[in-house]
Length: 195
Ligand code: GRF
Image (cartoon, rainbow, N blue to C red; front, side, top):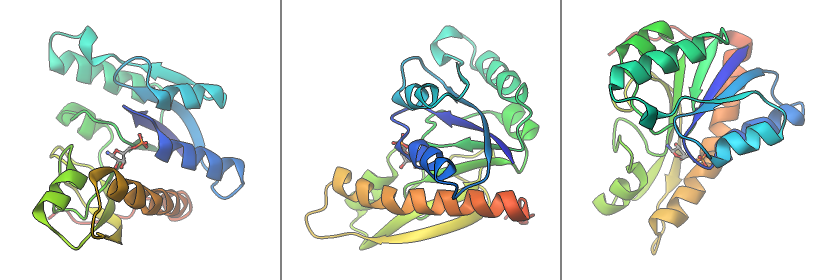
């Protein structure tokens, strides 16, 4: 299975995928790692590990649809079976979604459909939930919507901050992500009816 990974930040989840590949625990081929802005640690990590990288800088485009088109073309040029959003913090449009329909996978640090959006951990904590977690799902054109592939629950502890909770969630998120990629690479992408 050939994948392109999109990141916007530190790429610690990406690193766990790279480590799993190195350890022989995950048999997938990362065609490239790309970002929506320059100087992300995620791209730096991938380059240091010898993977091909690219940036389609959101700020280079005045029209959002043009950025979407450029990103879609760049990702498509690697002919991926799966595109993974691993902390990619931009909403992509229908052109991108339709090009990679059913094969654009996202991870989210909350139990969807609760607490979608850029601040899932903070919002769950502010709501006062006792259990949160993470979700790996097939992304559609909405914000953190689309068929769910896997979820894990994480208990919220007294005194948790956004950072402490997110770190515990990420431990589960990495495990779930690797497990899901392993399953997709062996069994293919399940066809889950859209809700
Ligand atoms: C993950 O929790 C992801 O779900 C969220 O941002 C985090 C990415 O962290 N959208 P990293 O860049 O992999 O360290």
